[in-house]
Image (tube, rainbow, N blue to C red; front, top):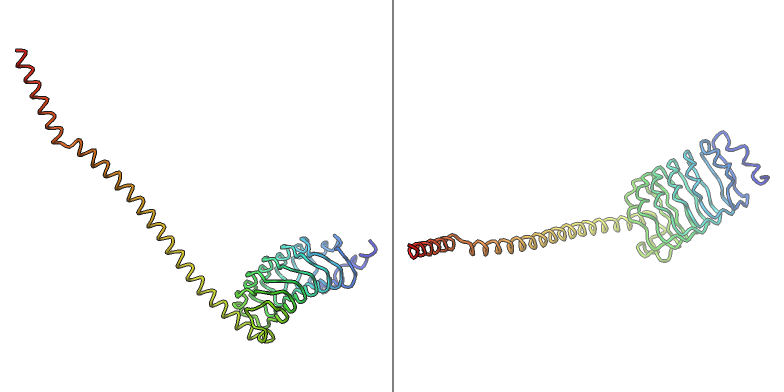
Length: 257
């Protein structure tokens, strides 16, 4: 199609493919024919409504810019782009980030300002190279404390998220304070997890103890039944019965003779 003519040459020798400002609502199939060559892909300021499954074919992609589209959905296959170093999803209509993004462990910058995100998946804590996390002007009510364990994190921007009570408003402009607050939440969460694990261990032991008690009760009932049976057939009873039988037999012989 004529509107896709600029795509025919593919990326330049540095692996850069700039397809920004084209008003595209969908991507042409031929884009993914260059999957082994595209290192930087700029699709900003189009009219795309989703990050489709085929993005998972861009296995050498390092930089992805989707700013200023109309995206509402991100396919989990984006997590297959494990060489990604930067993602820009700002100025879209995104409400949720798939957990699979946590597979992009080389990711250094994640920008997703001006969207409708309420939380991030805990798998963000797996992105061990992450330095910059920009989530300004969203609908955040929660940030996973796992982010605080990332050794390289230096910037977290979460201003203009009115419901983010876990980080007070006057602390959100200071990345160090945000990271400090998340570490407190992480440490508290770790303590809670230890207590929950201990409780579950005790609960399991109590369950096992109850099962043992019931099993022993059944065994005791069985033994009592066996004791009763044995008492009814105890040797003295048998011996007395045998003696009585012998006396009766002897009496009968005497009578006959």
